[in-house]
Image (cartoon, rainbow, N blue to C red; front, side):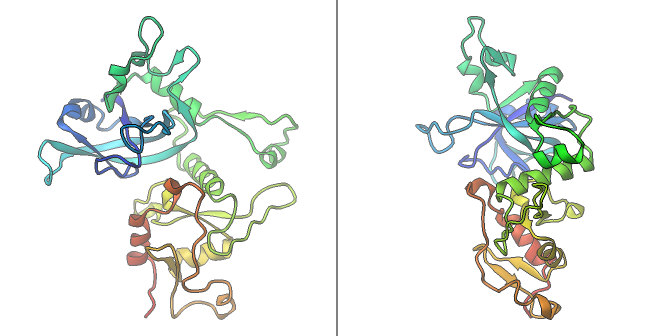
Length: 295
């Protein structure tokens, strides 16, 4: 087994869905197969909207574990790496910070960037480099209400993950909750309510669209920020979301007292960044397997 970097972007010509699969040509088959059973990091390049674009973050942004590698039956010479355990970082990690390069292979002896190495979409990664990137990605400043809860005075302390130790369910739930809240600005996607308690803690919750128990990933695109009551309705399939991000309400089973809280066809409040919007595949799963329907 060996760790690796998978380069991907929203405008990729390949059939990528980072939380689920990575699509690649035979050129990278050896590196991808070596990563089966091990961890990979996702990297967003500088060009994400065409050959002349330069708006990409040039940063590592998520972690996942390669489950298997299989041929793409529809496109000869291409393959899929199926992944599990996907989780976005707390912050994107730039490929270099000053003179330091997280991937030593991207730095030439003269200190300049090795563009040839950068051109490889799948790159092998040492354990030490992997650990350093993961630690940087999951380092964050604690919120004021978190400091208060821990009995810590100002200035805020910094939380740092321990690589390959912190990928527990508790760690993942906490990271998912924070990422979804941040994406939705602590505001309920259905009601538009933004409630912050006296200690500064947001009351909105993070709901998985496709449940974790049914292989739903801990991705912002598989999440919705919802108040507690709306979360309860969503998890029980009494409400759902259509392909146009409008609310669906079951015709039966909805408590009468809640009928005024949720209204059919109400537009969903979405994150400001489109790459964080609910992914169609997760919304479709919820409609087909969780939602109690309109009949």
